[in-house]
Amino acid sequence: MSATQRFVRDIFASREMAIVLVILAVIATATSLNQNFLFSTQGWRDLLLTPSILMVLAVGSAIVIVTRNVDLSVGSTLAITAYMTGRLFIDFPGIPIPVVILIGIAVGAGLGLINGVLVAFGKVPALVVTLGTMYIYRGVVLTWAGSDRINASDMPREFLRLGTLQIGTIPLLTITALVVLLAAAYWLGSTRSGREMYAIGSNPEAATLYGLPATKRIIVAFVIGGALAGLAGVMYAARYGTVSAGAGMTWELNAIGAAVIGGVAIFGGSGTVWGAALGAILLMTINRTLPIIGVPDFWQRAVVGALIIGAIVLDRYLAARQTRKLQEARDKT
Image 1 (cartoon, rainbow, N blue to C red):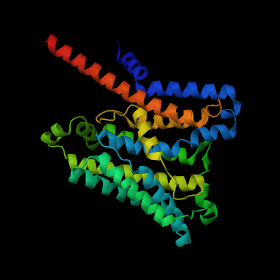
Image 2: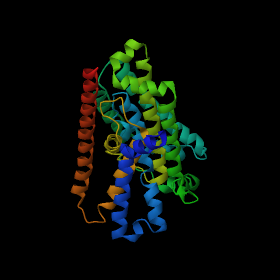
Image 3: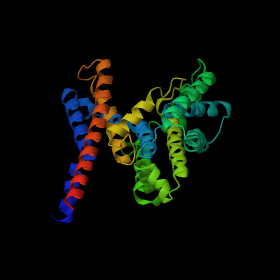
Image 4: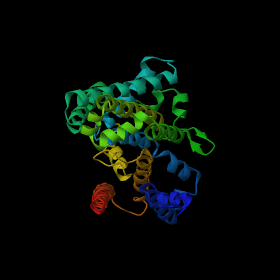
C-alpha cells in the first residue's frame, strides 16, 4: 500500500471524519424538512455562526483534558468576562475595542491560572478544584451583576457589529474560532511543548521521571483554557448583545462534551482539537435540528447525553483493543 493510500485510509478511519459524516447527515435531514435550514442567507449564516463560541471553549477544554485534567469553570469564566466587557464600555466610555478584548482574554487567563496553580501545586484533583472555582466565579458574577443586565444599547455599535460582521459569506466570529483552532492544532502537533502535553496526559508519573516540566505544562494548559474562555466571553457579548449573570450557564458541560465526542480521551493523552471543534459543531447543529423534527426539549438533552456516553464507551473499547493488540504482538516476539 502506497503512502497516499495509507493517508486516505487513515483519514476515512479517523474519528474526525466520522463526525464530519454525521454532521452532513444531520444537515441533510434538517434541510430535507426545512429548506431554509441551509438554502437561505440566514440559515447558512446561523449554521456557521452558532457553533463559533462553543468551538473556542471546546478547544480550550480539549487542551486541558489532554493533560488528564478537566476545567469545569469555563462557563463561569465566560460569564465574568462577558459581563465585564459590557461594564468596561459603560464605565469607561470611548475605551478602544481591542483593549476590551485583550482585558477579557487576560482576565480569563488569570482565572485559569488560579485553577492551574491549585491543581499543579496543591495536588488536588482538577475535578474538585474547578468545581469549587466554578461556583466561586459564578458567585462573583451573580454578586456583581445582581438582577441587572447589559443591553445592546450599553455597548458601542462598532463592537456589536463584530457579532454580525461577515467577510464574504463567513461570519467574523467563525473566522476567529478557526484561527484559534489552527493555532491550537499547530501548537499541540508541531511544537515540543505541545507534544509534551500528550506525554503528561498519557502517563504523568513517567513524564515526571523523564524530566518533563509537568507542573509548568499543566499550569499553561489551564491558562490557555481560561484565556480562550475569556475570549469566548467577549465573543458572547458581541454575538448576543445582552449579558446577564446567567450567561454561559452549563456551557462548561457542552464544551467538555464536545471535546469528548470529538475523540479527546477523558483520561488524557490522546485526541485532537480538530475533533473537539467538530464535536462543538455537531452539538450545536443537533440542537438546531431536533426542534425542526419536533423532538421535545428533554429528548434534545438526552440525545446529547447519549452521544457523550457513547463516545466514552467507544474510547474505552478502542483503548482496550489497542492494549490487547500490543500484548499479542509482545507475546509473539
